[in-house]
Structure formats: C-alpha cells, structure tokens
Image 1 (cartoon, rainbow, N blue to C red):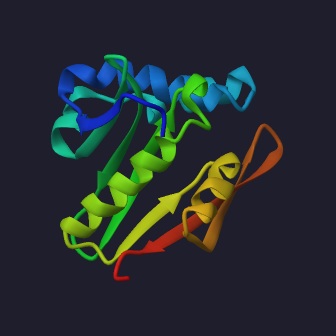
Image 2 (image 1 turned 30 degrees about the horizontal axis):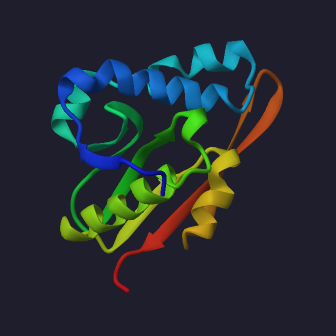
Length: 156
C-alpha cells in the first residue's frame, strides 16, 4: 500500500471532501457530462449520511484519498460507496479500504457484504474475492447500462 495512508472514521465535516472524491473517481471513467449530472445526487455525500452510517476515509498526506460507506444492519450489509481519487488508484488505497470494510461489516455481524458496482469496478471486486450474483439493467440516453451485483461472503 502507498506509504503513509491511514484509515479513520469520517466526520460529518468531511462530507464535502468525500463528495469531491466520489465525483473525481466516477469522472475518471469519462462518462458523458449529462450522466455525471444525473448521478450528482447519488455521488453527493451529506453530513447526515456520514453521521448516520459507517463511513471511513483513507487519509494520505493529511488529505482524504478515498472512502467507503457501509449501509444497513443485520446479516447483510451493503457497500454503498467505495471511491478512490484517480491519482491514488493502483496504489493499494482501494484494497486497504475494501479490506477495512470487510472487517468492519463482519464486526457488525454481517454474513454477506452486498455490492452494486460500477461496471468499471467489477474486476477490482472480483479480484478481492467477491462473486457476481446478478445485475441491474437500465437505459440511459438510449444506451443499455448493466450494473453488476456482487456479494462477498464474510463467514469464512
């Protein structure tokens, strides 16, 4: 992993920085501007969301480089967000965040971590051990878009 990265609980005042990370990471895949605008609400992290969920940030050189959020309780918890700034992609930040998320979800009593992935992230999650369990298809500007649904068994 890149040197000097620590993972800490995010605070409500981190919400703006986390939103910037989500937008930058999504934009890295060169989606059309109209799509990015359509996804604005889902990529915007509100202070109340940070306060009400398990949200953790990877901090490099004093600045958030990535983050994840777990949503839900019980035997199945969803990985709602996992985003890494493009300049930190490939440095181990995503792997560290995902490993932390698995440990946190298991500590919360989950047996399964559910993931609705961006198609560009499916390979990452599969390399981490997640398996594809389904997909969601929808149309966006006349183009079919398929989101892989993945699951990670936490009982092992």
